[in-house]
Amino acid sequence: MFYRIFLEKPERIEALLMLLHVSLLVRVLMRITARENLKKENEPLRIDFGRSILKNPTAEKMLRLLSFHYIMTIDGKRVIITKNGKVDHLNKLVKLLGLNLESG
Image (cartoon, rainbow, N blue to C red):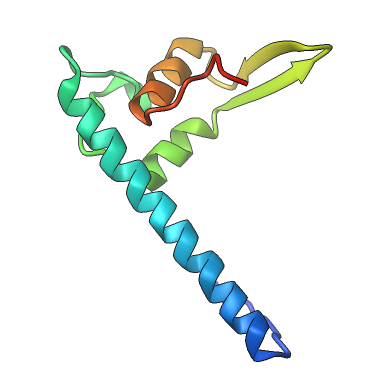
């Protein structure tokens, strides 16, 4: 599926290319970080679809797994809503990405 984007000025084209470049760098960083942290795990993580073992995750796979969860703050309290009911999967996935769910 292709969409047309009308960018009137060369500066806008450069800005769009910069955004694409940054997004690609973030995806690569996600993949490398997750794979390195996955090697450190003692037992295989079963957070993939159908509880299969997650090995060599791609950024697309991790973003898809993250899409099953919503984190909202209501009256200063953090609420996690999951489509699949597995909050522990979110905790493991966030840890795999080298992030901390508890920090602001």
